[in-house]
Length: 393
Image 1 (cartoon, rainbow, N blue to C red):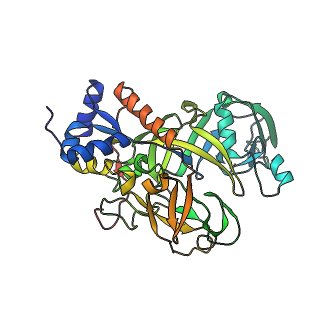
Image 2: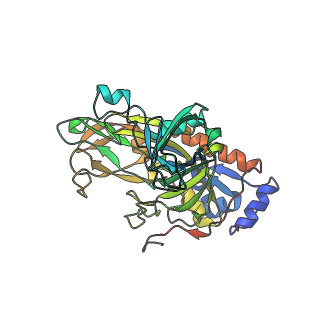
Image 3: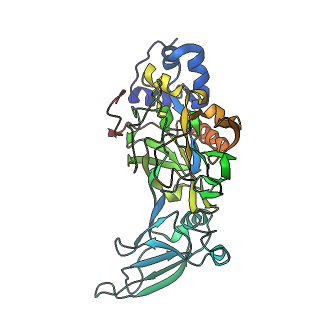
């Protein structure tokens, strides 16, 4: 019987290599901790796997499309009429997933609506489709060409690096609309007078909610990203650990974020899906999962927190959000949100998720399988994410 509750990455990886590691999903860990307590759970379990699949607007890819004859220093670049940023090296471009197509057929009929954007380009590349590449340049002695136009596939790109500045938000708002008109947001369509509510988190499966104080996640953490293997490369933009937290340490408001990257060629279109959000624009649904090493009872306790213990704020997107008003209308647990109805201002309000619980579970199970088969090892961070100034930071 195992008695050790303090472990190292090396010890856990040795158990993975030997095929002896005990790996469970974050959902499974909730039951284990509640039944046996953190001490016994830490002795029993080596790794807890997490997952999330949701719109992550702050995503994109660095694409190097190779030189032409004569050579070119591309200043303006388009992939399937979607503009990419060309202010890099000669044939490097960054394609953001929210950038819309300049010739979008939906926008022609309904101005401001977009059917196709950067996220769809990445999905099409992963599906093996042919993409129209266009570039314009101002011409120099060493880069004489002034334009190029050709069809390419993912295989034709010299480099394709998914690089997402802000993914995996640690908790997020529950959105409602208290105004008298419909509002269209990145949280979906919100009916007037609080007739629906939306939310976007995998709750007890969400990666950063299983490591609330960032004790195991940091620069160099190996992760599941878009169906392949990626890495955390920095804390994400808008990373804000100093927010109100529950007794279990879990933030009650949007807090930590991750910058992640990986080789697009390893990924697949099931886990990177282009989105068109009514009244908002384009985005990308990203599949992301992180294994949490159970180094001690503290990590066992953190990964044993369930949906009924994770709370978020109800925020009015009809007025308060757009006017940057820091006001909320109560807080609800993810168990309540997943029940299909919450109470706001004394009235029952139906709820709907933007994130996929089914896909989050699938990611956690895939990671569990990879680790169990000895195909995926944990990587100790070179530096942990910045933590809160108080309450355990």
